[in-house]
Amino acid sequence: PEKLNGYQRLQYDAHIGSQTIVNHSKIKGILASLDFPIHFLDYETSSTAIPEFDKFGPWQQIPFQYSIHILDSDGSLEHKEYLVQEPIDDMVLTLIKKMSEEFHAKGAVIVWYAPFERTRNTELASIYPEYSDFLSNVNDRMFDLMKVFSDGYYIDHKFNGRNSIKNVLPVLIPELSYSELEIQAGHEAPVNWRKIMHKGYQPSEKKVIAKNLLEYCKMDTLAMVRIYEFLNKL
Image 1 (cartoon, rainbow, N blue to C red):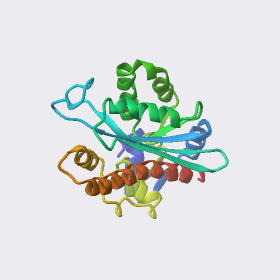
Image 2 (image 1 turned 30 degrees about the horizontal axis):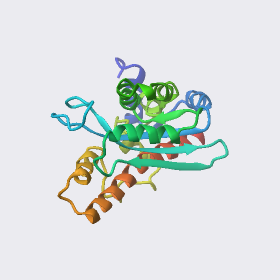
Image 3 (image 1 turned 90 degrees about the vertical axis):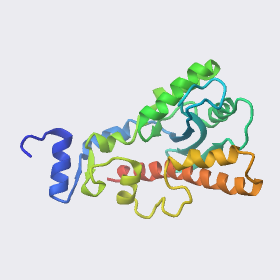
């Protein structure tokens, strides 16, 4: 252990002592820097070896769904969502247009693992230059909530050394769980979405799948809201 330092040492100490290590001043400073209204954003995406849609290449992540929770300074919480539910022309353009209408002109944008959402926005901005200002602005306002944990400002031995939202949420907010959802993991979302887009499924089946997808993506952003609130109360 004497050879460990920084984040590794904190992880070691938390594990050996079965304890929680919290840097209150760092967390307080980070949260205080976030402007309201705070937008909690999550995409669900699909990628295939052979491109299925114009303007996108092999294995390129194509957003087909988003969830946004918007938290205001008075504590009020609003939810917005969108899911592509039929094979329409330029479906991603429709998604971006809808999303641009949901966002406030100011306020922080919170995600979990920012490189993913930020890269999607950068790619979309190059494909749809008419929305490049909006997407770049979203990226400029973006904060990665996972970094509170991956940078070692909040470490709990129950995380088992991991910082995914699926590891953090059950420890901090045990009453909020993915276990009751039909879709419980990110890799399941595109598989189910392709069923919606497939002609072989009945409308009644597609309606149930769409409901499950919306509930899953909504849980991702609601989880971030609750974790943010938990940290804010420390």
